[in-house]
Image (tube, rainbow, N blue to C red; front, side, top):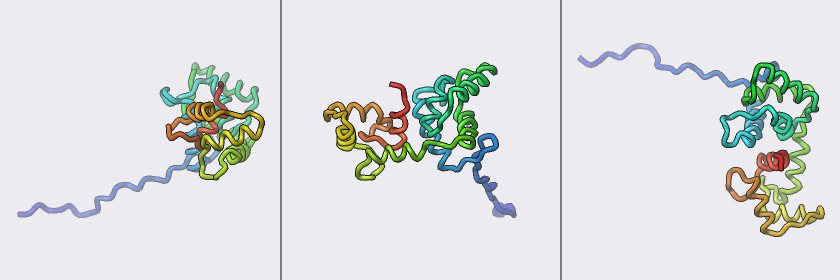
Length: 173
């Protein structure tokens, strides 16, 4: 006698659409993805966290305009519960609250990137970097431009994308 099949459907439960709530402030998938990329520039080689001291810098690289008072408030608050690092989720909550209060510099950073991205292909290449820096009075040799690109080029493709540009402009020297 052949095995009997169970009646009913073998349906997988529907996966709920992921809503990104950072505290009481909703963020779109695109916003979270962009913030994750910026955050990851600072977590390279670490356990997916940033140091408390990096908060202001990461917020600025993500387009925020935090005051020293605001940064100190968050650092003090987290330090009081003996935290020395900030996870991405904690960062999302802080940055979403900040965005709700103050807005962001996203547009200014994108416009600056577009000045360098002459052919508008989404990348800054050596020749574009040399052209812009020479035009503003800071000429580079090919070798110097290649070194600058290599320093900012986290994915190793030989050119700088927007996220790498943000990281390069915000990361300490």
